[in-house]
Image (cartoon, rainbow, N blue to C red; front, side, top):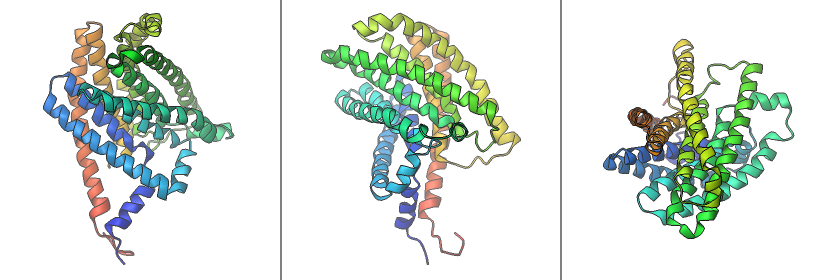
Length: 353
């Protein structure tokens, strides 16, 4: 008995990773960086991939929520997986920022509004469904890199709000409050998640298999905090911006230095996992969570360098951008090969592919 493409598609949707919107995040931010670097055609190509990925993953996610509610609910209640749902919020906002650069501010505002609603829902429901009522030992063992996506979602709201603000003068004060508020919440959450991760690493052994790509989001969360800070500092005058811009500007520079210091540690972790312990380098959806920080660090460095007139930092961002693009391209090809092998091949029950 052979399985059909539809059967395999249904199986794939049932087990769809809630973190697959990281593909949208990675494609969108690298497209933004290429736009800033003056490479419009390549930037547009990645924007097309970003839009297509957002539509397809959103459709598959809705399908899963309707037809495979038990599987989706289990993921939402699992502290090892649940925070990956925030990739939708971050993906929608990253796409909104890129579309705003293209002049499509109206669509950007719609995406931002939908993302804010989802962000608020997740912010108030996830602590109840994933954290409260669990034993401390069980909870600490569940802490992993996906928790930093909670921070990324908050900072993506700040970035998108600050990006659309120049085109929405009548909502300037409200957008300023939203941007500064989301940035501040994101900073607090980063400290909290960082403490959780540090305690988990101190109390429990971390196997090479557990040190997976989402841990790189620890750098991506800081990088998007830097980008959000530079965006807020560049916003038009508003009471909330005027009251906080000097603080945010100073903190942003400190965060850039700390983010840069994390890069060697992450490279050592990759070496330890894949070279020393020979963990498979096969494609997995969570790899996109490691591509996004590379692109975000590049864009954040370019933005900070331009805002504070620091050409060396901007140059670092330019160099990192091309490394991020190369990693994105390799990962995209690996994903397409994986999808082809998963969905297009003919599998016979009891036989070999």
